[in-house]
Image (tube, rainbow, N blue to C red):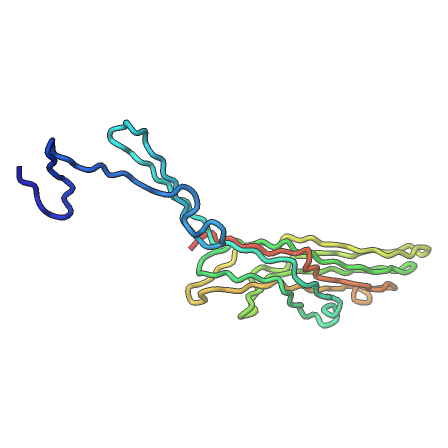
Length: 224
């Protein structure tokens, strides 16, 4: 019997009979190699082998995308009291870099506070806001969200001190274009005052902070 000598021909002639080697699929199950313990994008492959006596041998191969992801948190606090007067947003050290073009879900768990003493018959009308900006351009990526609020009025015979905390969810979709390549986004915060005395009426503002030690920023890429 003549057998085509081409290198791609798997058919061989043995002393007993013709032989065609069986092809078996070999793959990894779980996270792709070298991508298990980092934040890189990968394809997770699962190979389901058939029983050894099945004919034909049908292998089922499934692939899952493990997206780009990252987190930042526990940064320095920022004193927000000057922003009530200047009306300028304060930069914080809480930021992440979105590494590739695409759409990202960015989730912030942000905390701010306001502490004040209200004198007899006095009152406060103070609140903080947080937002997410594009560091390179200054453009607002996620619009301001109200965080802590300090709004009290004391009776004429009452004087008290009170602190308000404002754990805030700052989340939404952020797009990185092909022209941008990557994008660094940062949390900003500000303290506002409204009404008589810019929010302080016979009261003393003690502290107001962006609390970096209790704030986090996380991203996950969800689309190219």
